[in-house]
Length: 204
Image (cartoon, rainbow, N blue to C red; front, top):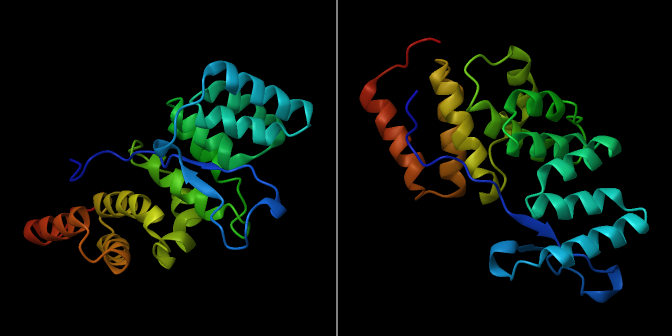
Protein backbone atom coordinates (compact mmCIF):
# COMPACT_ATOMS: atom_id res chain seq x y z
CA UNK A 1 0.00 0.00 0.00
CA UNK A 2 1.33 3.39 -0.96
CA UNK A 3 2.01 5.54 2.06
CA UNK A 4 0.04 8.77 2.29
CA UNK A 5 2.46 10.54 4.61
CA UNK A 6 6.19 10.76 5.40
CA UNK A 7 7.77 7.69 7.07
CA UNK A 8 7.63 7.44 10.84
CA UNK A 9 10.50 8.98 12.76
CA UNK A 10 11.58 7.86 16.22
CA UNK A 11 10.73 10.02 19.19
CA UNK A 12 14.04 11.37 20.41
CA UNK A 13 13.62 11.88 24.12
CA UNK A 14 15.98 11.35 27.03
CA UNK A 15 15.30 11.11 30.74
CA UNK A 16 16.99 13.96 32.57
CA UNK A 17 19.08 12.51 35.40
CA UNK A 18 18.24 14.48 38.52
CA UNK A 19 17.67 13.66 42.15
CA UNK A 20 14.17 14.04 43.56
CA UNK A 21 15.33 16.91 45.73
CA UNK A 22 17.06 18.84 42.93
CA UNK A 23 13.93 19.88 41.07
CA UNK A 24 10.62 21.35 42.06
CA UNK A 25 7.53 19.10 42.06
CA UNK A 26 5.86 19.06 38.67
CA UNK A 27 9.00 19.96 36.76
CA UNK A 28 9.19 17.92 33.52
CA UNK A 29 11.74 15.11 33.72
CA UNK A 30 12.36 14.84 30.00
CA UNK A 31 13.92 17.13 27.43
CA UNK A 32 14.07 17.01 23.67
CA UNK A 33 17.61 16.05 22.67
CA UNK A 34 17.25 18.03 19.46
CA UNK A 35 17.43 21.23 21.50
CA UNK A 36 20.75 20.49 23.22
CA UNK A 37 24.36 20.00 22.13
CA UNK A 38 25.34 16.41 21.38
CA UNK A 39 27.92 15.15 23.90
CA UNK A 40 31.26 13.98 22.58
CA UNK A 41 31.96 10.28 22.30
CA UNK A 42 34.43 10.57 25.17
CA UNK A 43 31.78 12.10 27.43
CA UNK A 44 29.30 9.39 26.50
CA UNK A 45 31.88 6.68 27.21
CA UNK A 46 32.69 8.24 30.57
CA UNK A 47 29.04 8.56 31.54
CA UNK A 48 28.27 4.97 30.50
CA UNK A 49 31.24 3.73 32.50
CA UNK A 50 30.09 5.65 35.57
CA UNK A 51 26.60 4.19 35.28
CA UNK A 52 27.97 0.67 34.90
CA UNK A 53 30.20 1.14 37.92
CA UNK A 54 27.14 2.32 39.83
CA UNK A 55 25.39 -0.90 38.77
CA UNK A 56 22.86 0.91 36.62
CA UNK A 57 23.10 -1.04 33.34
CA UNK A 58 19.64 -0.02 32.13
CA UNK A 59 20.46 3.68 32.52
CA UNK A 60 23.73 3.05 30.68
CA UNK A 61 21.86 1.28 27.91
CA UNK A 62 19.44 4.21 27.61
CA UNK A 63 22.37 6.58 27.12
CA UNK A 64 23.77 4.30 24.40
CA UNK A 65 20.34 4.10 22.74
CA UNK A 66 20.01 7.89 22.64
CA UNK A 67 23.56 8.10 21.26
CA UNK A 68 22.57 5.80 18.40
CA UNK A 69 24.77 2.93 19.55
CA UNK A 70 21.98 0.43 19.20
CA UNK A 71 23.93 -2.83 19.25
CA UNK A 72 25.70 -1.96 22.50
CA UNK A 73 22.41 -0.82 24.03
CA UNK A 74 20.70 -4.00 22.81
CA UNK A 75 23.18 -6.24 24.61
CA UNK A 76 22.57 -4.47 27.93
CA UNK A 77 18.79 -4.37 27.52
CA UNK A 78 18.74 -8.08 26.65
CA UNK A 79 20.72 -8.91 29.76
CA UNK A 80 18.35 -6.82 31.88
CA UNK A 81 15.23 -8.22 30.21
CA UNK A 82 13.82 -4.78 29.32
CA UNK A 83 11.69 -5.98 26.43
CA UNK A 84 10.29 -2.69 25.14
CA UNK A 85 13.81 -1.27 24.84
CA UNK A 86 15.12 -4.47 23.26
CA UNK A 87 12.42 -4.00 20.64
CA UNK A 88 13.38 -0.37 20.08
CA UNK A 89 16.99 -1.39 19.45
CA UNK A 90 16.05 -4.23 17.10
CA UNK A 91 13.79 -1.91 15.11
CA UNK A 92 16.62 0.61 14.78
CA UNK A 93 18.93 -2.20 13.64
CA UNK A 94 16.49 -3.20 10.91
CA UNK A 95 14.91 -6.32 12.42
CA UNK A 96 11.19 -5.44 12.75
CA UNK A 97 9.98 -9.04 13.10
CA UNK A 98 12.35 -9.82 15.96
CA UNK A 99 11.53 -6.46 17.50
CA UNK A 100 7.81 -7.23 17.60
CA UNK A 101 8.44 -10.61 19.22
CA UNK A 102 10.32 -8.93 22.07
CA UNK A 103 7.94 -5.98 22.34
CA UNK A 104 4.99 -8.31 22.83
CA UNK A 105 6.68 -9.70 25.93
CA UNK A 106 5.96 -6.36 27.58
CA UNK A 107 2.98 -6.95 29.92
CA UNK A 108 -0.24 -5.33 28.76
CA UNK A 109 -0.98 -4.28 32.32
CA UNK A 110 2.48 -2.83 32.92
CA UNK A 111 3.79 0.73 32.77
CA UNK A 112 5.55 0.27 29.42
CA UNK A 113 2.65 -1.24 27.45
CA UNK A 114 1.80 1.88 25.48
CA UNK A 115 5.46 2.53 24.72
CA UNK A 116 5.77 -1.04 23.45
CA UNK A 117 2.67 -0.61 21.29
CA UNK A 118 4.09 2.53 19.71
CA UNK A 119 7.18 0.54 18.73
CA UNK A 120 5.06 -2.38 17.47
CA UNK A 121 3.14 0.01 15.23
CA UNK A 122 6.37 1.37 13.76
CA UNK A 123 7.63 -2.14 13.08
CA UNK A 124 4.35 -3.43 11.69
CA UNK A 125 4.24 -0.96 8.79
CA UNK A 126 7.27 -2.78 7.34
CA UNK A 127 5.75 -6.27 7.58
CA UNK A 128 3.19 -7.50 5.06
CA UNK A 129 2.11 -10.71 6.81
CA UNK A 130 1.40 -9.89 10.45
CA UNK A 131 0.52 -12.61 12.92
CA UNK A 132 -3.04 -12.18 14.28
CA UNK A 133 -1.53 -12.19 17.76
CA UNK A 134 -0.01 -8.80 16.97
CA UNK A 135 -3.46 -7.31 16.50
CA UNK A 136 -4.64 -8.93 19.72
CA UNK A 137 -1.74 -7.35 21.56
CA UNK A 138 -2.51 -3.93 20.06
CA UNK A 139 -6.27 -4.13 20.63
CA UNK A 140 -6.44 -2.33 23.98
CA UNK A 141 -4.02 0.35 22.76
CA UNK A 142 -5.78 1.01 19.47
CA UNK A 143 -9.23 1.04 21.07
CA UNK A 144 -8.17 3.64 23.63
CA UNK A 145 -7.07 6.21 21.07
CA UNK A 146 -3.99 8.41 21.48
CA UNK A 147 -3.57 10.00 24.89
CA UNK A 148 -1.13 12.67 23.77
CA UNK A 149 0.46 14.10 20.64
CA UNK A 150 3.42 11.79 21.26
CA UNK A 151 1.20 8.88 20.21
CA UNK A 152 -0.15 10.40 17.00
CA UNK A 153 2.49 8.82 14.76
CA UNK A 154 1.71 5.35 16.10
CA UNK A 155 -2.02 5.79 15.48
CA UNK A 156 -1.41 6.99 11.93
CA UNK A 157 0.71 3.88 11.40
CA UNK A 158 -2.09 1.72 12.84
CA UNK A 159 -4.67 3.44 10.65
CA UNK A 160 -2.66 2.53 7.55
CA UNK A 161 -2.14 -1.03 8.76
CA UNK A 162 -5.83 -1.60 9.53
CA UNK A 163 -7.02 0.05 6.32
CA UNK A 164 -4.57 -1.93 4.22
CA UNK A 165 -6.07 -5.12 5.63
CA UNK A 166 -9.63 -4.05 5.00
CA UNK A 167 -10.51 -3.19 8.59
CA UNK A 168 -11.94 0.23 7.87
CA UNK A 169 -13.76 0.49 11.19
CA UNK A 170 -10.57 0.28 13.22
CA UNK A 171 -8.65 2.42 10.72
CA UNK A 172 -11.20 5.22 10.99
CA UNK A 173 -11.29 4.89 14.76
CA UNK A 174 -7.53 5.47 14.82
CA UNK A 175 -7.88 8.56 12.62
CA UNK A 176 -10.72 9.95 14.73
CA UNK A 177 -8.51 9.52 17.79
CA UNK A 178 -5.76 11.55 16.12
CA UNK A 179 -8.18 14.27 15.08
CA UNK A 180 -9.57 14.42 18.60
CA UNK A 181 -6.06 15.24 19.88
CA UNK A 182 -5.19 17.48 16.91
CA UNK A 183 -8.27 18.52 14.87
CA UNK A 184 -6.11 20.21 12.24
CA UNK A 185 -3.67 17.34 11.70
CA UNK A 186 -3.05 17.49 7.95
CA UNK A 187 -1.87 13.89 7.45
CA UNK A 188 -4.91 12.46 9.23
CA UNK A 189 -7.24 14.72 7.27
CA UNK A 190 -5.60 13.73 3.97
CA UNK A 191 -5.77 10.01 4.77
CA UNK A 192 -9.45 10.32 5.71
CA UNK A 193 -10.26 12.28 2.53
CA UNK A 194 -8.33 9.88 0.28
CA UNK A 195 -10.04 6.81 1.73
CA UNK A 196 -13.47 8.34 1.30
CA UNK A 197 -12.63 9.25 -2.29
CA UNK A 198 -11.40 5.75 -3.14
CA UNK A 199 -14.28 3.94 -1.50
CA UNK A 200 -14.11 0.70 0.53
CA UNK A 201 -10.67 -0.89 0.82
CA UNK A 202 -10.17 -4.33 -0.62
CA UNK A 203 -9.98 -7.10 1.91
CA UNK A 204 -6.42 -8.23 2.61
